[in-house]
Image 1 (cartoon, rainbow, N blue to C red):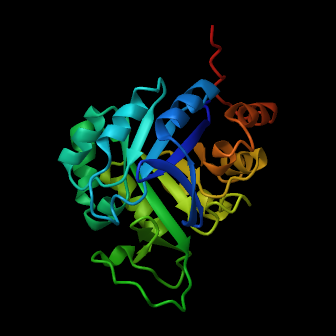
Image 2: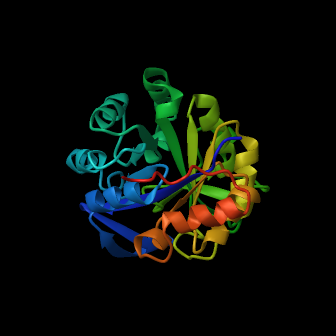
Length: 275
């Protein structure tokens, strides 16, 4: 049986780790390289590094920060933000990332997902999906170029880009299915409604997308206690769980979460013993 992965997330803005609530009310959470080293020692299975303003500010990701972070790690590192073409993905992998996460660029140019997967392998390509509950009374969004992805009467979640700033008129479930078809190796799924709320993941969304695609889904947005991570893998069928607030501010450790899951029969990777 495949183990479930526990993944801390470093949202980085201007070289500092930050954390918000539903993508706003941002506060400082520390130095990325120091936190990366800490989570490696704590027994995290992987680490995700997201430059949350690179796309909205139309700038490149901070390669020097990625290099500093990767030097501290013996676990896989996924990096996202600011990559717009295959050459950007190559630079990121050469800087030390094991995987890249594509979000805004993937929505704006879906063929980038296919091209990147062909060049570097599906295992190196993660598509991040930031989604918010769809309100049918809301008409302030564009019609997508691909009509098969458009919101419809049965839509439940809408895709956003630019760090959750821009609605795209795209159905999140249809988009998840599409990126899997394009060759993505994994989906990082974040609920904007639950992000930072500490009240649990959007289990309906996690379950719907996990059951609809043949690739692993990482649940993100809303973890406040170990029970929430347990619900994501059991009720939500997620392959991995990502959290930030509970780890960054010391509410729970990675070890606390792994112990909680193991006691409930969830297969997890043991924490490496040092010395």
